[in-house]
Length: 97
Image 1: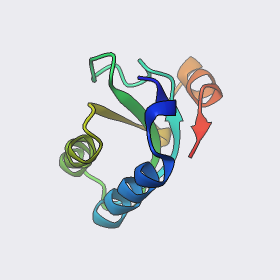
Image 2 (image 1 turned 90 degrees about the vertical axis):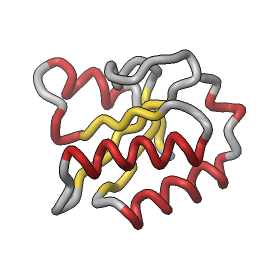
Image 3 (image 1 turned 30 degrees about the vertical axis):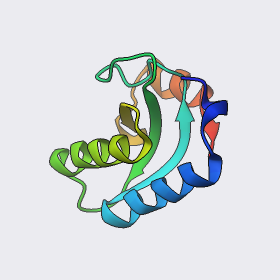
C-alpha cells in the first residue's frame, strides 16, 4: 500500500476514533508485512501501545473497525509484544503518524 495515497487528516481522524473506543494509542505506521496475521498488498500495519483493559477481542475489534473505516485490511502490532530481534527491527521501520 502506498501510504502517500491516504489523506493524512482522514487517517488521523479514524485513528483517534478507534483510540476513543478501544484501549489503544497508535504511535506509527509500519512497513508492510510487520503484522504477519494480515494479508494483502493494500494492507496497513500500525504499531500501538496498549492501555489498561485491552483484550484480544478488543484488539481484533479495533483492527476490524479501522479496516472498515479505511477501506483496507489493517494489522495492529502491540509495542509491548515485540521481543528479541523484533523489539529492535520493527520500531526501526516505524513512520510516525
